Length: 387
Image (cartoon, rainbow, N blue to C red):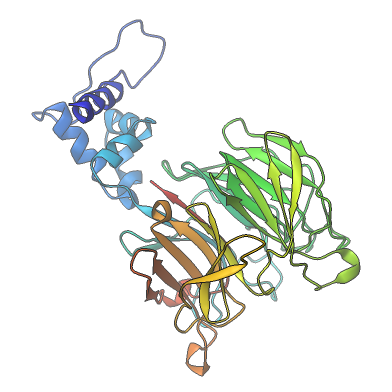
């Protein structure tokens, strides 16, 4: 009964006047002639995400329904949610990626947004409305249905930028976001508590940074944070515990180029203070990911979980088969049910191509996904969302 009442409320919200131009009454919109409202909503909710752009073009009612915030609830109730992995990826030199930007330097590889649908196995590029060109070494992070592309290098000047571009994955539309307060690259970046945190990295003079800030994609505003205790260039970023705390792992100071530290700092939003964690970092080439509040890393010969400073690391699963060491990026999907890892194929047979590995947290099994050649380039940053 409770589920039925919730479904009726979803339908009621979706049936409201799509014009929304100040009318004092609400006009019923028949989504599919001859079908009850609940059946029509079920039909629309089950349309694959790849077809949502076409769905919104059918009529005003369908466009309004697909854009309504409650449409995600309808898809969830119908069991039609899909897990998408967004990758900021260099083009694969062995593949024909099509025409290149004439203004870009010849030695600059193509860099763009690739999307892998974990649920359906489909691949595509987010080209329509995306920033052109995408800053090289830009990072990405996701909040709700939004994916933000932040910072990186201008591919023409190779200087860091403060640019922010935001994709609403539910509508496929891009917008220019408020710029970061500091231009930076190679910084820690992750979503935590509904905000996107950035910390560390380096400026245009290659000086390591300890500054940090947090972005609210709904308000399109940045919040300057207190400085970390240390400079942290090339540090990892992730959310921890309940998902409301941001963790900046390792990195190195300006004076110690490439000398990665084994500590970390996490930001407490309640006290607005940074707190240090000693000896957290696995080897510098490890890829870190948070799975149901626990910090995992992919390194050496296994998947490992951080048990705290006293207990250190413990093995929780096998190493991705055929993954070249030191090339991994990782992201959690499906609410913690799976971990997706990107990286280079090991051995001479890899040919410089990259692939994906999907880890089932329950069965501890890996599935290797070899993408089409045009999606087999190096992935610098990765984010995921469920839609």
